[in-house]
Amino acid sequence: MSSKESPTKTIVVALLLSLVCSVVVSTAAIKLKPIQQKNKELDKKRNILVSAGMMDEKSSDSVEDLFSQVESKFVDLATGEFVAEPAGFDQRAFAKDSATNLSLTAEQDLGGIGTRSQIANVYIVKKDGQLDSLILPIHGKGLFSTLYGFIALDKDLKTVKGLKYYEHGETPGLGGEVENQNWLAKWPGKQVLDASGKPILALTKTPADDANEVDALSGATWTTNGVEGMVHFWLGENGFGPFLDKVRAGEI
Image 1 (tube, rainbow, N blue to C red):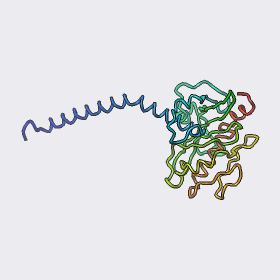
Image 2: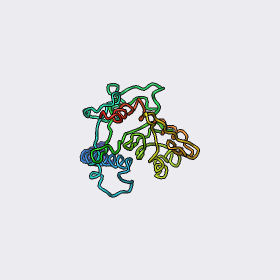
Image 3: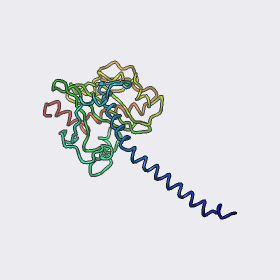
Image 4: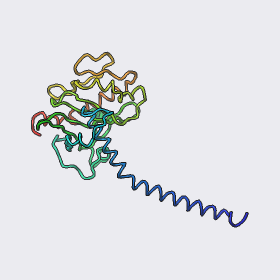
């Protein structure tokens, strides 16, 4: 073997090539991060608008223009009162941090999430200065994953304007049907809370024929139960219940 083909030279060349590639990849990641973050925020806004029926999935309308009608607020879930945005707020991260979360008992944990953030980001739409709808983030366990979505309530605070799931790992064709537009179209107009603010939604295997019933997902019992459980949790006393009570009473 000649000196030009020595193992040492080969290793050095490989190391230099790896170093150059790592620098290129790192530089690209740093430069692309702001773009990725902007796209993530844009996608979040689109999902909020879709849940509220302000745009459809295939709409070419400007997300930013439509979202200018939406007011973002932060709520202390224990008191139901508005608070300032916490520094570095990320609801998922807050739910995992013992300094910013609440541990749920088995009786409380209808959504199967274990802990929840003490603060939540809510979205308000007004028309002529009056409440038109509230969009609330919800999440809970299905069969194989945690489902994340938004539920929008009409101004009566008990009727659904829309539901949108944007992240899950459920089985395609079964639990994954939470994304099916035909199923989601069954939600608007359904009554999920009674006059006192108690959750009354029921997902039923028989054809839904009551104002508070929605058809269950065929062949996806665990996911169906998860959807019902998380709606009951987030709209109940351990979720947004105190906040909804204050809005209903005109206190905020």
